[in-house]
Amino acid sequence: MKLAPDCYECLRRLLCQAADLATDDALLKQRATEEAKKILDDEFSYSQLSIVIATKIHKLVKEVTHNPDPYKAMKGREMTLARELYPELISRYKDDLRGCLKLAAAANVIDFFREPGSIKDNIREPVNFAVDDSEQLEARLKDAGKVLYLADNAGELHFDLPLVKWMKQFAHVIYVVKPSAVQDDLTLEDVRKSGLEGEFGKVISTGIASPGVVFSLASAQFKQEFESADLIFAKGMGHYEALSELTPEGKCFYCLMAKCTPVADSLGVPVNSYVAMLQ
Image (cartoon, rainbow, N blue to C red; front, side):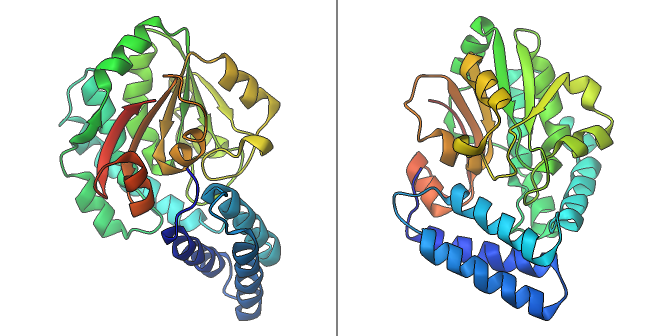
């Protein structure tokens, strides 16, 4: 999905947030903001992907502020909130594919632009898919030898596990996270610290600390696993923005909340709709 006019303001807001979180030093903050703004102005084009620009912005902010993980505290709060809410929410969903899919989708409400109170309220609301290809997913899973499950926000970890376990009845599932910190995305270290690594089974990284997946920068291992997978299960808008640029082959399944107008318009749904779509 290419950039839309609304994406400029979102990326500007992102760079300001990243700089604010990265340091309390006013001069470093100003330098990071100014240099990140230059990246945005130089790179913004309707033929470009937002995740490519966001990756460059995050790299710049980390380097200027000497902070490798500006979102660490925010991510910790989100993971704590999700862990506390999980026992309450899992009891509301059936232990079948559709129930596990809704549970996983519910956690995608977590977002670094949303306040914890808002997340807490929204995640408790019922999940109704505006696009619901869950039956096609079930059919594809029964014929799939290998599934690549692309994780999104760190707080979604617990909510992903029941779906991963359900999928493992039919296929070999590889859980894919980021190699190191970027925004509030799930990393290899987060999975290890959670104590759930053994339950997920095989866990690998994309090889690049980027929102979604920037294929040109991804690791050879990830590219190989991606090409050989029978099904790609992709959580979140960042992955949709990246994978929707590929030729549709009925291989990618998107599970997300469409939190912004450009993504919602691309999917043909209202803003804040849940989507479970095979493409």
